[in-house]
Image (cartoon, rainbow, N blue to C red; front, side):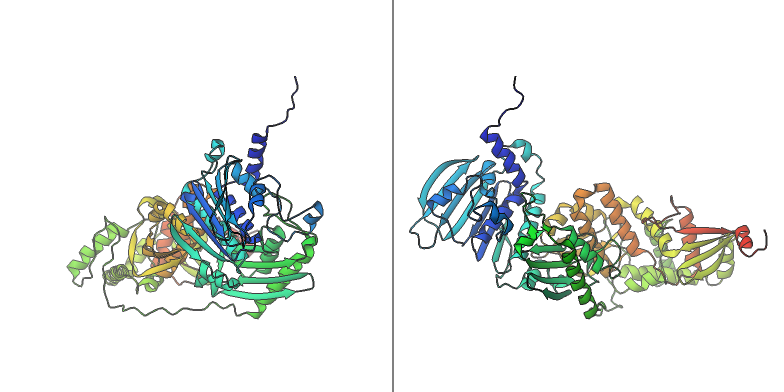
Length: 615
């Protein structure tokens, strides 16, 4: 019996469709690219529930006649190339002739189209790859494609789709990239019957960036250009102060096509080296126009990958262009002066449902009661409160005023017996001092320890926050904190709302792609809390690459890092002692959450050998 057999056409179509249509976002991408190639000036994208039940892309392009409308659903039918020679000089986004055929093979498709000057249009209905209806209809010039029930006839593929909110996020990301690729086209994006954004179509990419990403990204951009006979380059790069934990804010366009390319990524990394922290990535919008004969886009059906015939030249051009611009711009971060707040105005924040409300008091009896409450709420073996932290946050919350009262009370109570008390506390250790206002030197018996104060406090806070993950204390912010999100991030933060609540954040929607933070972790000031929230969202975008446990750990690590004392912070003797004592009872006192050493020890014997006192 023969082992090799020819597959039937139905199976072939489904296999081919799987190469082009990975998820609803793939459909949106192919349809928009067809609209752009048709010369459209206005494109509207509408989706419902992540595009799984419904997608519609409408344009005002050249449209098709009755014959072309039927041929468009045939596999490898295209108007963009005529022979294999054209593959080496591709000037359009699409060229394979597979998009509509692949989409129609796994969904219900309705096409309405009309050429300019035609008396009527054409309506074509296709289900599972078969044309079931062709009629004349009234419609506007251009094309309108409705796609329903994606993967209705391939349930094995459909079950691998994510939740509608996640699929919607992928579609938003796709539409965003295509908006940036062609600023001369006006895009209108409607999700679940709600308008998400509209671009102007004026050809100004900076205007598109402002509409999609907000003023924070737009105002930090550096613009630089480079041009030769066969290569034109325009780069909009964020200043070094604007950097991210992943490459999601790097957009590369070659001849109007969004691409991914290691050569371009490597050139940007090398150009920004030493300008931004390790494992951080700048925002970059790169536009390159190059002779089509010097690139190959016919690598994968998704057309995302690209190869250059002369990669070294491309690398050096991008690297030098960015490097030169970094020398020309003022990279000193701009300080934004916020409205001064009345530090004498006392407000009572809501910290949590279980916490007791605190009121500023003055009598000794009331102070004693206040102290007991604070002991219950804030006494923790693994954390100490630093004067500098209190000063930084004291203007933003009355909670800090209470902590200040608590500290003043402690100071007054211990003033008389201060020396005796400290002597009793450190009977087994002696604080020698600090080195460079960063490293604490402690002597105990025949050993002295050098402790990195930031790394030590980071470890202490990390273990504290990990143990209290389900009940991290929060406080209401004095003034609402508005955070502008990137396109698609609003669905993300709503989807992960439970996790963000556990990390101490309470928020609500505030217009398109913006939220207001109402409550933040109690140990952070407002600027720190806002920046931490943005970094957590950046991590959430890569959640498919990491599981929930590691995501939780990374978020807590960031929180601990933000709240910990920093290098060059001057600590008092009591604070140093408390830090040392708290470090001793941690599970891992040897490294910080990032893996850096916290403490090193040198024995008296080792020191004496260094000075040749003993041989």
